[in-house]
Length: 76
Image (cartoon, rainbow, N blue to C red):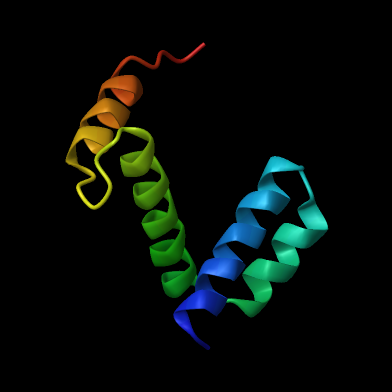
């Protein structure tokens, strides 16, 4: 599989999750390498987040903001 294929699997997993498609999630997870899938999801999140922050290629600002948001979460 190519890097593109791994990213497409990661995108499909995120789309299935967003649409609450349990069958789609199970199918993707059954056929994808979990380590590669996790790495691809992380890459996509970092790329998207750093672009949104205006710092493509440097995810440090995005990660700092994400950490601050996580630290602000409270269990309900």
